[in-house]
Image 1 (tube, rainbow, N blue to C red):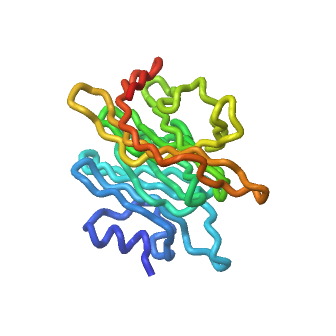
Image 2: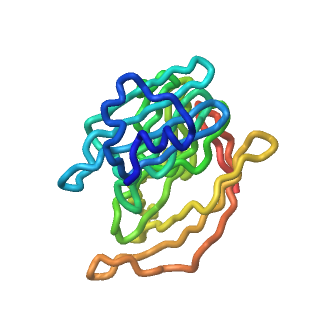
Image 3: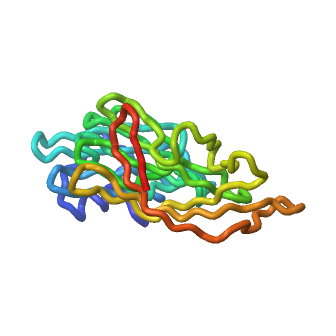
Length: 235
């Protein structure tokens, strides 16, 4: 079984002085190992197989120090760790349509808990993420948002903030239709804007509340500014 100690041994890292769980099997974890240091987010294996306390540790090779942060509430399997400027991004997994997203400072203090999964992480710490949605809904209208840790603000990017979108539920104004939308890719352009590939289709609910296509699939390329005050998008 994987253990915290085995991950340290693999990288020839020193053992933290408070590592009481060094040989406890761990599960549903992810690691980050780069020139700035090592980080791991993991759970201990419990007798009932449940995920309980989330543990995050990081090692700074410059100061040779360990940091630790714990949270009693799980965020599901840890799917990935990112660096965003001086911040550590921990991505969890609640369902195929939902993902808790923790933003931790370099000192491993919780800065913000977002609801979604990252699509693009910028070097200055800003994160573009798709908001979580209700799983198994008749239609899923993905919505792109921007979080800036410097100001601790998040704002809708696409669709426009005036569009009513409740956890992926989005009515087409003036109709009985719902929007089904997926965000394919998010790329940073040379001019500092982002390019977003979007696939949209309108659906109508049948008598069993299932989404039935009510139009052809539309593929769009959207270009957006990423100003935290108010992003602006155009086709």
